[in-house]
Length: 194
Image (cartoon, rainbow, N blue to C red; front, side, top):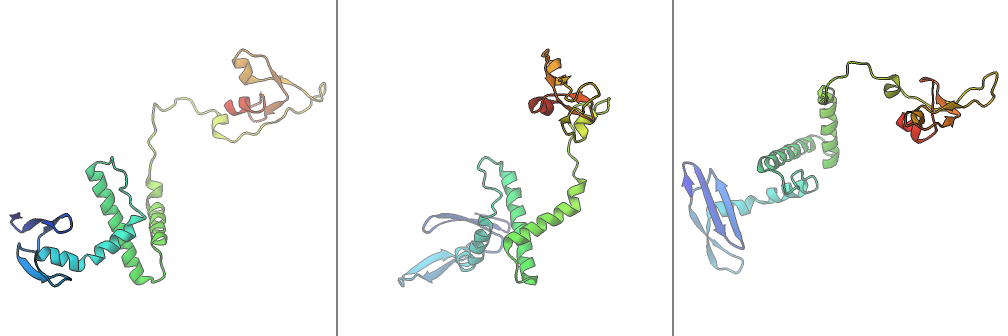
C-alpha cells in the first residue's frame, strides 16, 4: 500500500510481518539464501534485517524495565509509557557515551532522583472533602506518649476513668494517661483509638 511518501508492507517469510516506511519504495530485490537459492524480497525487508540488531539490543535493554506490561491499558497509555521508556533508554545511551562505567539501573535511579529534586516540592496532593472550620485537635497533629499517672498526696498509684471506654458507656479505670491531653486511657486499643 502506498500513500504519498508512506508505504505499508505486509510480508510473509517465517511469519507475517507488517512494516511501514517513508524511505523505501515497493521495489523487489533478488537475494541468495544460505542454501544458494535465489529469493525475491522487498528492499525494505532486506534493510530491516540488515539493521535490526539495534532493535534487538534496544528490546533487550528495555525488557527489564517495561512500563507497559499491563494488558488492560488503553492504547494511548501504552504508547505514552513506551515512548517514556525509550526516552529514558536514550538518556542512558547518551550518559554511557560520556561516562563509560555506568549501569542502566543506576542511570535510571539518578534520573528519578534528579526529577524528584527538581519537581518533587511542586507536587500538591489533592485535599478531599470540605476544609475544617475548627482547628485540628492537638492529639491528631502532635506526637503523644502514654505514661503512668503521677502519684498524688493521697494516692501513690492513682487511677482515673478511661475517656475512650466512658464514651462507649463502659466505666473502666486506668493507671495510664497522656500528660499533654490530660486524659486517662487504657493501654493498647484505647490509646490507639484516642
